[in-house]
Length: 412
Image 1 (cartoon, rainbow, N blue to C red):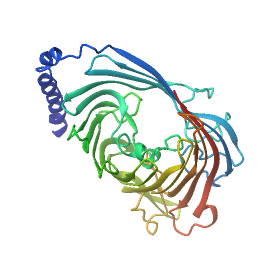
Image 2 (image 1 turned 45 degrees about the vertical axis):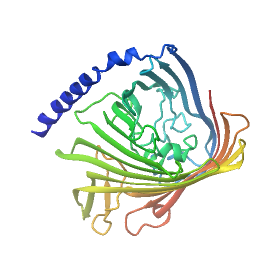
Image 3 (image 1 turned 30 degrees about the vertical axis):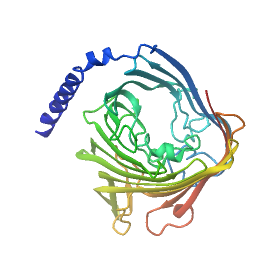
Image 4 (image 1 turned 90 degrees about the vertical axis):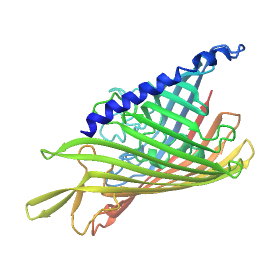
């Protein structure tokens, strides 16, 4: 009954909302800036690396960029290539389109030891796709913009990526661990105090499939509230999302949903920034606990609760020339994991995380800027894996992936 009521109600609210917005268009046109001329610009961004994997996890765990790569592999590699176009249609409307190729896969061509599948064709060549294509209606009411189409989600846009500031090295913790950084939908992005811009919000309804076409009837709901205090040096950001999906496992249907909460706290200045970001993700019917007795196996569908915390800092060593960055993440895919009752856990279709392994991530390096918008960033990329099952020893208990990189980054 709720589904029958909610969907038409949302549609009616959108119709009413847009109807009211058209009322003041005549007066807006009368105050139009006669100096405005439509126009746009092409821009681009490239992240590239030379990497060398000095140590590999013996159990090939993880779903990160260098997971499952063999020890000793090295390569020159594009990691992200953007080509974008921004166009101002009028003072009130602007359009944005972005072609992206993001190769988060390993450099092998055999297909045997591939890590995360990147945007590559069957012959492993780079394959650009339409990542963003959106229309922005500026000041749909004072201080608030309406964005329709593919765009960044509230999960990372307002505080997470700006305060971490080194997406060229790695994604933020919540993006690193499978929360949508971009989606196709509709969102309102605004400020409660347009004059001072100390408080604001970002809310969105999206498909939940990034740039891939929708394949179910459920939607993702995103919400974010933020504040910039003490002359915009102290940033506080609170985010939440909710998504309901359905999946079938063992010939039984289980309602599945996820609900994430995240908080970012950062002290931001020009010479130095320090920040922390933590999240919890409550996942209903997300894992299966397995009990083995002799030749019999019993499986129980369970709720899971993921938790992650990230602390980071970056600062200037030589103005406009040299900076440093350092970050540590701790991630537990299921704080409810019970290794006294279950021998192991399984991840059914629709599962968000691999439940049996906790991870620690470390990244640190330098940022050398010979000229504006050109960066050389020598850095290390390290993930430690810890098994959650009882009585593990050796590599099953703890092992790691270690990668040495020279990252090359430029924008134009």
